[in-house]
Length: 488
Image (cartoon, rainbow, N blue to C red; front, side, top):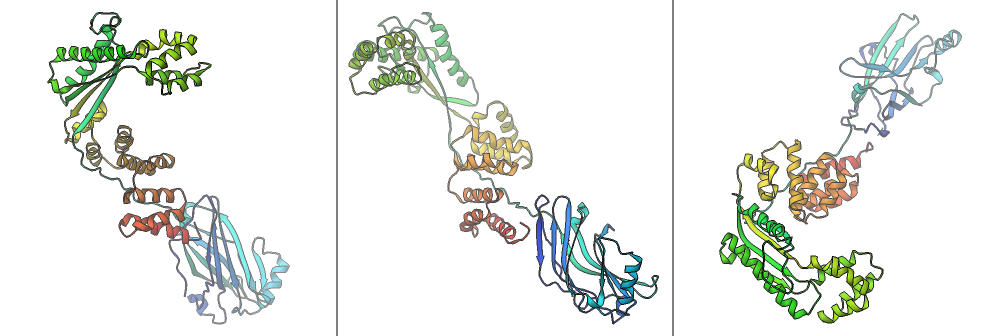
């Protein structure tokens, strides 16, 4: 009776070993040997198959304990690897010869290496080992023991092939399912367009003159931002927010007056251009932009930068702080007054708007190319479902989603899954760090560990959700098969 081992796997770049203990070929025979009851095939056990990129090695224990040969007879035993298409290769043979036959070979010197000559009556169990060049057809093949029985005449030949083992050297790999997640239904799609304008006002005044100094360009910047949204048929403006700032020099109370008055003047100017519903216009002001000043100093190469920052961060009143900055750092202050303070007199604006919903995948695909910021995660997922999951376009949708929503757990989870599918494991790990603790995210972390070869960690991660997600149970089964196989 012969053992039949299938699904024996190996990686082609690393040597693998398959141990089969005590595989005896007990009672095997062929018609030829059945006619010679005195002759018994060898007992075969402890078969080892090793395969790397270029070589297939076979080793086994051969025991001739039951062999009973007349003096003039011999059995030539040799392993044969073959497939169903007729490919085959024979490994070196062992000549088990009776006494007369044995000495005949010695005289004739006709048994050449690597074949081996053994006197049958004095033979003991040996460990047979041989290698052949690996060929692709051997991936699915059979290992047989071939026996040639020769009698007194060299033309008298009986042959038998006895099956020993089925070989399946298909690479064993981890092939999990890649599960993306649909985001929760999104509500109103609110978007923002932000900018800063540096509108000039006459010294110590709050009146706005559109043609004064650089005002034509600065006011045009605000109008262009508003018009970009206002003229978009897919968008509706919900608010325009303007916040004005003054620079820190001069009396604080006067700066309050200037920041507040100039901001209101600019809001009135915008309202006059468009006649918006008054509820849309919103404003705020800040008397002195110390935060802007601090940011500049922090990034400067002033020799006494740290001391200046310490002063800026102090609890001194604004006027006292400005005076001390002027007295303690006169050179730096002069530079700031000329080159930095003008930029601290600015008006930041935000155009807030909502975008209509899209349901037609063709329209979504076109918008993805031109204005992806208009799309929600749900709309991107709707488009993805219409695409071939193996296509570049499908992957591009998820890459776009995580760019548009960099802090969204679902966008990051899906980007991680797509990058795992593509083999970009480092990118996947980075995205997974921003995913949440959902079952799908746990599953993704588990399969990432499996793909990285961290099998024990993968099993520990997947175990808690194996009863909840069939994909997790399947991934665990694959990993445990790899872990339990000698051909890892």
